[in-house]
Length: 116
Length: 110
Image 1 (cartoon, rainbow over the protein chains, first blue to last red):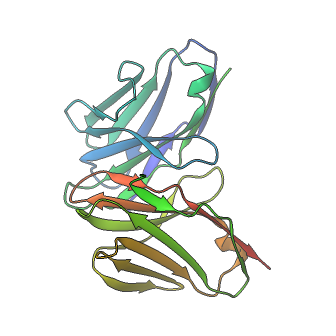
Image 2 (cartoon, rainbow over the protein chains, first blue to last red):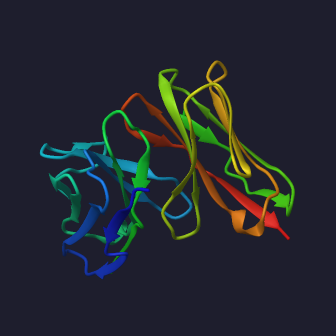
């Protein structure tokens, strides 16, 4: 199988602070990682696609300066929510794909972010 | 028009019955189709994927794909209370990102 580990599983932060979420592929090299956000009772909304060694591609309406994505290695991508506000409270989920031809994606456990 | 559409449910089925979930998509270039199960507060887990027209069976699950009609379905046989979850349909063009439907909530009643 393919295991994707996401950390932390939950975090509470004060408004105005920044939070970093890590996504690691444990037993494979992920050429592409995806970051999603999910609000209660809604589906997953893709925020951005990151490829190792290059800039992330953000979906329309997602602020790249607010949601900083780094994919420095084939096993690690990070999402930093900068200057977090209560409306950023959500469930953030990463997924990783082994290569560009295999579209099957494996999900991390998700991170529940609460901004107070 | 949403790219991937699902009935939000809830779909209520008695234990032991067949649950039938449907999903339609708008992009005719879609090539890969996935069904994920998501329990409340958890991330999605892959149940099945299908690439070719027809049926694909895996245990109690059967995925059906009809590219001409642009729909994909999932059948859950002998439904169990543990199958109660939200089922997400996801679609991808070649080597591209996954687009998710809104999900169908399934309730299996003992």
